[in-house]
Length: 82
Image 1 (cartoon, rainbow, N blue to C red):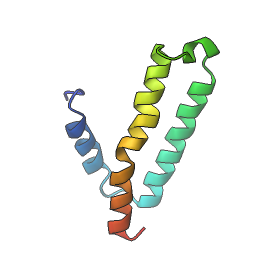
Image 2: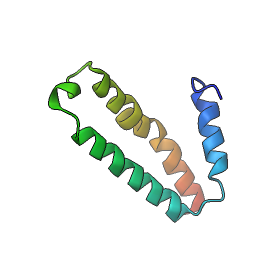
Image 3: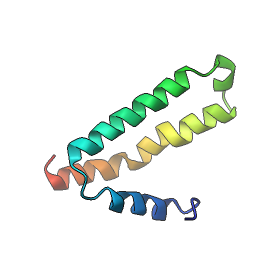
């Protein structure tokens, strides 16, 4: 798979999880966020400086990624009555 094609990558993962109960998806999200946060807090302070690799990863894989999908998730939850 070409990981530079984010839409195709996301579609593949969404299709694979289509039959997964919502509660299980929500739990996996909570668990993965907790692991992400734990990894970030374990980093030395100097790795978190603006422009450093860790800072860029935190923003792109974390905050910006959540913001990017927030509207899509809200729309899906509304369609599903959640």
